[in-house]
Amino acid sequence: MQRGLPMQPTVVLLKEGTDTSQGKPQLLSNISACLAISETLATTLGPRGMDKLIVNERGEAQITNDGATILKLLDIVHPAARTLVDIARAQDAEVGDGTTSVVLLAAQLLKEVRGYIEEGVSPHIIMKGLRQASDLAVEHIKSVQITVDKSNPEEFRSLLIKCASTSMSSKLIHSEKPFFSNMVVEAVLCLDPEDLNENLIGVKKIPGGGMQDSLLIQGVSFKKTFTYAGAEQQPKSFRDPLILSLNVELELKAEKDNAEVRVEHVADYQAIVDAEWEIIYRKLEAIEKTGAKVVLSKLPIGDLATQWFADRDIFCAGRVPADDLQRTVQAVGGSIQSTCSDIRREHLGTCGSFEEKQIGGERYNLFTECPKAKTCTLILRGGAEQFIEEVERSLHDAIMVVKRAVKNGEIVAGGGAIELDLSSRIRKHALSIPGKLQLVMIAFAKALEVIPRQISDNAGLDSTDILNKLRMKHANGEKWFGVDVDGADGIRNNLDAFVWEPSLVKVNAIQSATEAACLILSVDETVRAPQSEAQNAGPRAPPGTAQRALRGRGRGMPRR
Image (tube, rainbow, N blue to C red):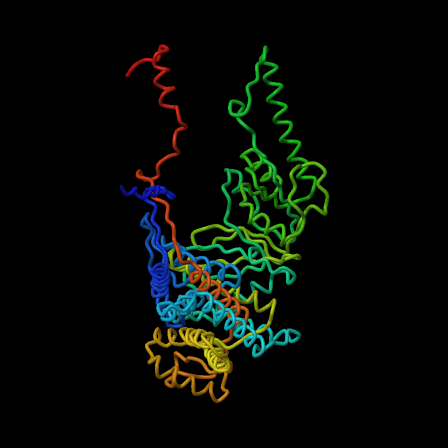
């Protein structure tokens, strides 16, 4: 009698319901997801890019064509496609501009090598080729970039304005480029040249008026804070005032809120109340002795203090937002004090002019002619709330680009010129390499052409015709020729046309796109944990809880 074969035990490795996908189909599926995202963003690229209207689950609408903002607002659930969201955010944080370009480039790299994956080429060979091509591209950018002479302030300022204009050309505010470019450059040049902290550029949005009503205040401005009745009797304008910034509460507290005091006699209670009034009056007198005419505090300033200051011609504002108070101190000097005693002259700041002014429907406190002004405030005006928010996003991108240009001062021509130059350079180099790496590098060179092609498509031009003209120009050594969305010919020398971008934007975009493409190519299996059955199910109760609850019933607990 033949003995039966021993049965293999079933090994349960993953929880029931876990979804595992692996192998080549998984890799192709990830590439398709990335291509789907790039198709959404493709139409927003360039000076003739379209905007997207995105409505969230609460019904709030946002209009934007900023790549990073669109990806942040879209609720993307595909794990591999989220990589593109991360590179767009990184590009936005690092250089501010080029967020759409970096996503399109990463997706196009994957699209170009997809055929080799299907034919069975190892992803590692493809990744090696992409990295080599990326290093070559960065080297080439550094060899052709133009360094602008910072010693001539007029020339350097002109470069910054052109970089800001190029950044704004694809935004909603492109019609007001000269106005906003000047404003952005002024704002960045206000900052401390050592650290160029863009957080010190305050942005305040006031609906109403036109875009041209927007202001740049060389100093600090913030919205009038909540005030009590006595505030209307305070002076609203000073010349060369001393300014005291506090982190102190100048308000009487209701006893029932903060303390329980047991007393035997009414006189004892009165002594406690008198002591409290004595403390606040002592603080107010200490502030008056400093000679400050403007008192700002992060914490509330109550009705008693407000009236007391009004009687002595002192302006006060309580509950000032922390970032506004910090910017005020940066501009006027001094420091934020946490006590009212021992305040000396060096702790106070000053400014040439302080006034409270009506802007649109709001009142604003303005500190101008500040001696230590390393900060400024942009006051944005416009019709719709969504419109002003998009103006703010556009200006943020332009500020970041100008900041990078101030730090580095190296530029390249935009409008697809540098991408086509890199493409022809990498193609030539690839032909000198044997083996499969040659194919991968040619695919990289072809992927770079997605930027000029998409700019042409979005402008309604014939992209095939434009690219053929540009390839011919670049083959003849005209390396700065790019797409011209305005002219009849469709191409022009973008360096002479002042379409300039900091080279750092391009270097960062190419490196990020290559890293993202390599990351997606290196994944061949996705393990997805099963969703819990109840949506937003709470944490599990510890074992034995139910039994303890039932045993408790027997000890006098009422039955329901």
